[in-house]
Length: 432
Length: 160
Image: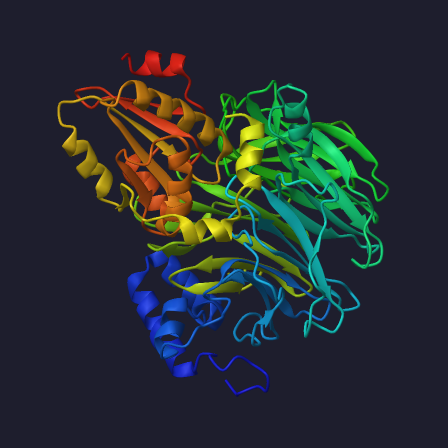
């Protein structure tokens, strides 16, 4: 590994990589051992925060391996960009070698903010074709579930970022949280979130209002300006991430946990247009999960080969479906078919889907009482049948929800772990 | 708790101010992977109720309000509170418990970032949804409930 100008000085030397890899091999199970041998150095190169801190001689370490709830994207040139939270700041870092080494993180918000970072609610990062770096996140404004949706961008390749803007336009001290960001093929930027303005208005009228609402805004100039906020739906669940996927070139489909009959928390799907048009709003899952609680368990979706069809995966503990499920939703008929239970074991959760080169990939986390397992399965026939789940990693320490990033060069697992640090590992590799 | 009360509490406070003003005099202890077994041993031959909550869970506030009233009426009610937040959020948790008069009752917070294992140590079948409550009989057979606890449900699961 040759030193590259501008890269993080904490980049790991090859000798440490080797010893760490050996330690990992000895401590892991046979499945992981096979995986590691087959996958080569990419995953094994992972640094972790503890080792960085030990080497920093008391200096503060700002690194993707130490930061909270990272998310990632790959730009048109195949370069990895990641955002994470540390010490009330959002940071952005880039890797030109698929996550082996990273540039020195750039601080995005100069003023500290109580930025949310957890499995369901993390900073989002996208890079437009012209190189504009787009970011959104939620800033907590009190201990009582209030927050604001924040947005900023960089037009100088991530060197500097504009002063963050608040995107909810109601001016209310209420809940605006769980943002999701999506850029369409035509360059329209959609930002959607869970919003409590209607809950507050109902409460002021003395009316009950189950849950919260889904709102969104759109930019057609890569975040220079946005439309007013539009409402998608009343009565969403309050605490689960929203999944987004393209619908044609200009629009997006979103999937979220919705409250039905005041107490059932299943899922709804809808198509959002750039002028505030909401169409095809329908129930996407009928699990009959009767619960007045926060599941903290949002869905995932990707577009299927057939236009208007979506692969979706979600968690429920309902009377009809319990555990992680997969299904294919057709916007034209409003039905979800080919529903299968992916993993019904207790502790299994947080699925994430990707599609690349006509193969579907799904990862999720299992737990066997001692360790978390990172599980992967694939489908070559548009979700009709799936491979036997394979355990890619096994860790007896804390880990984030797993994410998948689709890049020009393949599909990558993006996963923050205490043991292995932040992993960015190709899973669409033929070698597996 | 009404939305107005939530709003007024929110308006009166910002997180930064909170962090600097709340004292650490509370009854919160760290919950590790072996703690729940020890807690149960402390109630050998006795019934008790466990309520799991977190600072980020709105329905939990409704349940905490009920439990606060319950403890006011019956200070001897055998209740254990466990927050699933990392113990670094202790001050925020104390602020919320004080809202409901629950700051002095036995309370624990997750003290390991590996939350899956802590959840498993409490109940292997629990998926992490909140609020979650457990009703232990004297022989420590138990029932579990996900979602807001009401007085009716509490009476049903744990006649008192």
